[in-house]
Picture 1 (cartoon, rainbow, N blue to C red):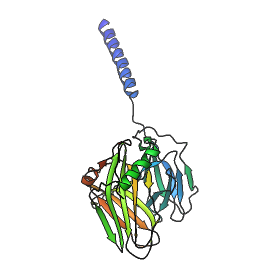
Picture 2 (picture 1 turned 180 degrees about the horizontal axis):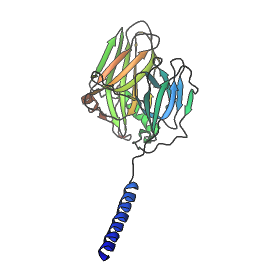
Picture 3 (picture 1 turned 90 degrees about the horizontal axis):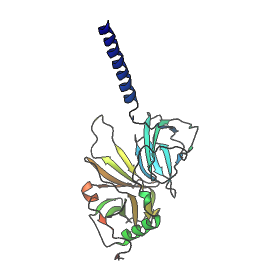
Amino acid sequence: MKKINALMVIGFLLFLFGLNVNAQSSTKLQPKSIAPYPLEITYFKTTNIIFPSAIVGVDRGSKDVLAQKAKGAANILQLKAARDSFPETNLTVITADGELNSFVINYTPKPSVLNVSMKERNSKNVIFPSPGSVNEADVTTYATHALYSQYKGRKIKHSKYGIRFGLNGIFIRDNLMYLRLTITNKSNISYDIDQLRFFIRDQKKAKRAASQEIEITPVHIQNEATKIAGQSSQTLVVAVPKFTIPDKKYFAIQIFEANGGRHLKLSVKNSTIIKASVFPTLESNVKYSH
């Protein structure tokens, strides 16, 4: 009888131990998921998303979604469908305050909402370094330095239909890179700029494999132009969050002509990116060439 009672006590203790282990395992930290925001877009109208801070990165799940930052507003993203009835896809937007915003995108001919404010949504589960920590006045000053600097890195250019588009300087300071671009119009027809876009893309797309494309959104453009008159040239500097390029990818810079077909593209390798010239501090003397 004593032997039976001892076995019962041992069994009861083992039962309590199992409950304790299960309780401890259930209290372990579990990864939190960020629920995506459902969004419908159309081919015929533009959807505007308003964020509480500047947009620093956009990743489209499909080329069926067209995305661009609104001119003059760093915190507004404009979306439109590239074609009708596309399959469900997604969109990820990172803002300068470290917020990750995830969207599930579907097509509809008549979206019920065209303007969405993300100011009330909170997704600080992921923290990113913020280029916005750099003072805006400093960014403008560094961009001006890049515009007139004597430094000329490796030139990458593309010419088509009398338009020459080139990258002739990459500079870095703190969390921002400054890209110096020159657009030359050798034709007699003015070149109206519709969009200037920046992407990290796959070098080659394997069969049946989805193409990964990450759009990089500028945080500042110095000496911005909307039109290049015939027989003239314009140099501008674009400030973007610093980055390097993973293997089997490249950095693409595209310029599109409004109501025209003179679209040009630059392909930049990682070996060029990592040779960016480092800016001296603002107190240092910087020589310019005019």
